[in-house]
Amino acid sequence: MPDEFIATWLTSTSPSPRYTRFEHQPLTEQIESREKVLPALARVVFLHHNDPQDYRQDIKALGYPGAAQAVDRRPRTANTRMGNFGEIVASEYLHQMLDYDIPIYRLRYNPNPESSMKGDDVLAFKFGNEDGSDREILVGESKAHQQFSRKAVEKAYHQLVEASRRPHPISLTFVVGMLRREGQPKKADSVLAYLNQFLPHKPRKRWLLFLVTGTRPSDPFGCLQERDSVVDNLIAVDVRIEDLAALVNSLFEQEISPDEL
Image (tube, rainbow, N blue to C red; front, side, top):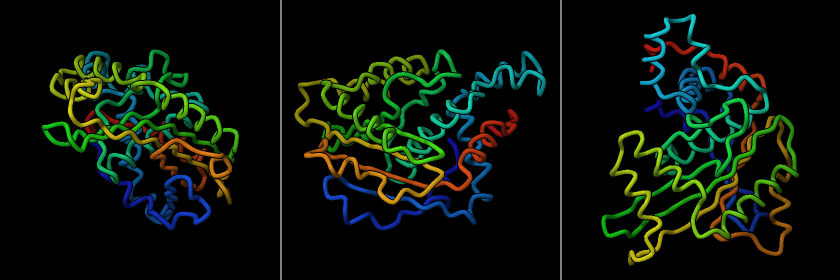
């Protein structure tokens, strides 16, 4: 598993009192800590895109470092890198800070790594007790842009609304299939149990909108607060990251040797 670095890098600050329709969690980058967390951050970006066992086998067959770029599934397209980075930070925040389980790194299974992957950006779980109580499922949408975009926030929220209208997340069966493929049948069964309508305890559903920007918007979620209503159990997280575009490109181009995995 990747090193835990979010708490060193990002700090929670006071939520805006203006936002009363949802839970707001602003994060602040500790820029003085960036250098310390860069190796772990680069590694987690790599691991969200590449299975270490497959990567080692490919490198062994083809040779290192000449073949490394050829088998590395990290995208080279700037927009795709930015979008994937937002998804990765959102997933790691949920796992490291809020104790959610992220069963698979879905970006590993993107049939076209240079394009954004279809489906829910983030699907996270709390598996609760053996009797099915205290279970929770979270569907998240992430947006990462150098410049703040109100339209991007509105689009992400619309996607969450559409997801909330479905009986279960569209990515859930995909997660089950990938877990079985990875040889994790027990975890697959635990995820599949969220489709079982006969369990006595219904899982709690939560929704996440995770916004990463290179600028500091004064009112990042104003378009949500202005609505007549929002989906229940919504958490909106925003974080500004200095020199975002340059950081993202450097992370996606960082050389990772098989010995580091």
